[in-house]
Amino acid sequence: MPGSDFIVFGAPKIEQSEIDEVVRCLKSGWIGTGPRVAQFEREFADYKGVTAAAAVSSCTAAMHLSVLAAGIGEGDEVITTPLTFCATVNAIIHAGATPVLADIDPRTMNIDPEQVKAKVTARTKALMPVHFAGRACNMDALSEIAARHGLKVIEDCAHAIETEYHGRKAGTFGDFGCFSFYATKNVTTGEGGMVLTQNDEDLARIKMLALHGMSKDAWKRFSDEGYKHYFVVETGFKFNMMDLQAALGIHQLRRVESNWKRREEIWSAYNEAFFSLPLTLPAAAEPNTRHAYHLYPILIDEAHAGLTRDAFLATMTERGIGVGVHYLSVPEHPIYQERFGWRPEDYPHAMRVGRQTVSLPLSAKLTDEEVNRVVGAVKSAIPQASKGPASPVAAETVFT
Ligand SMILES: Cc1ncc(COP(=O)(O)O)c(C=O)c1O
Image 1: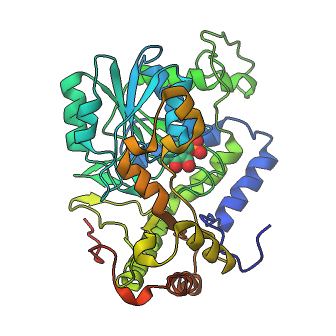
Image 2: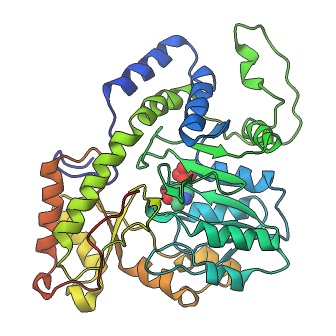
C-alpha cells in the first residue's frame, strides 16, 4: 500500500453517490448483469448521442468482440498504432487476425494516416486507431482511407470518453467504438468496457457473445418475469459487466463533465508551470476538436533534461508522486518480436516517444495542493531546469 501522502497515479474520484448505489445494489439481491447494466448502457448511449450500447467486462473484451462482429479473423490484417497498450494488439490476435503497425505522428502521438496508407494490403480488413491520451486521431484522413479500401474502423476509445472531432464524438466514426472503465480511466467501474455500434445486428451479436453465446436476454432468466429458457447459439465468452460495476458507472458518468473540467484546469496549470523547462510538453488540441485530457505525457530527452527518463521516474516516485509510462512501443515487447518479427527501430517515432515519455498525475481527484506538489517535484527533478524548453510547444489550449 502506498503511504498516505503518496499521489496514486490515476486514482479515481469516487463520491458518496457511487458508494450508496453500490450498497443499494449489494442489498438488492441482484449484483450480476441486470437492470443497472441496462441503465448504464442507456445513459452512456445518450451521452454519446447514439441509440444503443453494449456494456462488457473491459475495453479489451469490447475490441475482441468488435473484431469478431466485423467478421474479421484468420488471414485478415488489422492496422493499428505501435504507441498503445498491449490490449489493442492482443484483441486483434485473440480474434484470430493479424495486427499490422503503422507509426505515429510524433507531435500528436496518434497513428499517422500516411503511414497507414503504406501498410494497406489486399488482406487489410480494418483500421484500429487509438485516440491517444484523449486526443482525437485524424478521423477525416483515416475514414477516407477506410472508405477507399472498404475497411471497417474500430476505434480504441479507452482514453477518449469526452473526445470530439469536427463536431462528432469519438466512438461514433467507425463501425465500432470501444471504451474502457478501468480504474484509472475518466469514467471508472473498476474494470469494465462498452461497445458502440450503429448496426443493430452487430450490437445483438456482441451482447450474445459477451454472455457465453446464449440467446437474447438470457440475463433475465432469474428475474421476476419467471424462469426463461435460453439456447446457446455460438461458443461465446464470459465478457459481461455486473450490476455492481454499473452502480459505480452510472454515477461516474453523471460527473463526466465536471471531472473533465478539473482535468482541463490541471492540464493548463502544468502547461504554464513547465513551459520554460527543457521538456517536450503535449501538443495543444487541434481546432474544432475536444481533447479528453486523459493523460499528460511529457518527453524527457536526456540530452536536454540532464537525466534519463527512468531516472526521472525514480525521482518522482521517491518524492511521493505516482507516474506512468504510456507506453513503451509495442515492438519493444518480446512476444511480438518473436511472433511477428517486429523491431522497435522500424517504428522510430513510437520508439522514441516510448523511451522518453512520462505521464504525470491528471486525475480529477487531485487537490490544488497536490498539483503544486507535482509541479515542484518536476521542477526540482530536472537538473537542466534553467536551459529552456526542449521543443517549441504551445502552452495555450484550444477549446471548442
Ligand atoms: C489505449 C488502451 N486500449 C485498451 C485498453 C484496455 O482497456 P481495459 O483495461 O478496459 O481492457 C487500455 C487500458 O489501459 C488502453 O489504455
